[in-house]
Image (tube, rainbow, N blue to C red; front, side, top):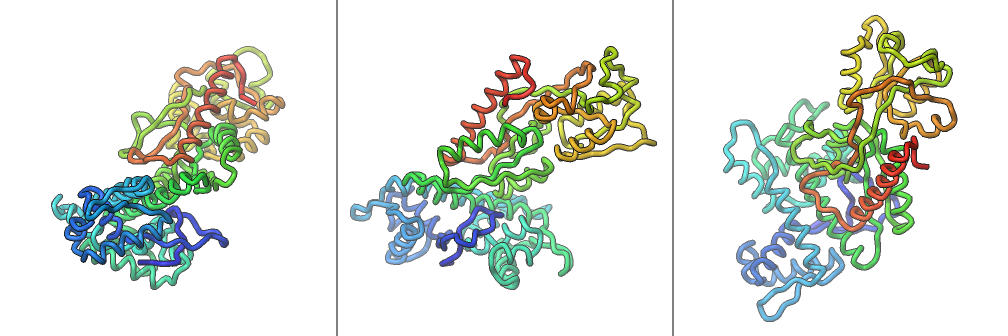
Length: 436
């Protein structure tokens, strides 16, 4: 049992004034799961191979950790309290994440992989899971140690212990540059998701008491950063002022990796559709249209008739990242009109700030939604060119893990996000550029 450690979302650094909260023992969670499934603490004790007094002490310790009575006992019969239902639901999901721990090494039998997951459930500690999760999110033992507030040697020892438990190497490379193996990355992801379930159990218990102070991490892609996510966050904080909101940006693949490690709850932005990676799911909010944009006063914005494809080829372009749906639109446009000139080069960025700055200071062109440049458009600083685009639509929505089970705070945020999206759709139908 690890007492006095700050309980955090995987990848989150503890605030200086965070209260010390005990981490639950995985074996105790497994005992609780079996006790409720069997309706018997004695049967659970036998299955988990501990004594009856030890089983009673384990349940008492869990009640202390979660701050609530988790079971009712009548003789040897066991039933969960409402708080116990919350904890065991999340505990079962956490244990299932660990049992599904990873593909193992190439050539290992499925039975060997299942055994590795079972060994993890039986013998790993939450401290060990936190160590490998912190390594995965921070990239080194030194950074993981800083994140956890521990000595680097302690983090390394915890990770070596997990290697021994699962019976396969989880790290590779030299002492200066250690990285996770495929099996190690998969284990770190599942460990992070298991820890996240424990965090969500605690958050749901606080929500039941009317306290909405958990940590919500939103991955925002370019379009969502300007209006969609901020409006939903403002509404959420108006209802739940104690909530802690973190909005992170970055490339889509990087945000997906953060989400797989339990360090990001949702990604809001352009959906990938057929290119969606395994284990993810998408929910559409609205369709957004792209247009070609330039600075006011640009040679192609003079109003002398429609712009031709040959005109577009005369100017440099600011391109979306290669993984972005808007990049596919540009590539089709370029194939038709020869926009990419090897002698001229181009700028590639996912930063709206950089895009705005380059457009304002040059004759460059870009593909973008008017919703993303609403201020500059309404102020007459940036203008759309009169050039019709075919199939220049993107579906904007929510990407999440298929296995995710949001708590109430997360569900409320998604509800506000849908309200913001409805405003966007309404204004688009009226022909407005944005939705201020």
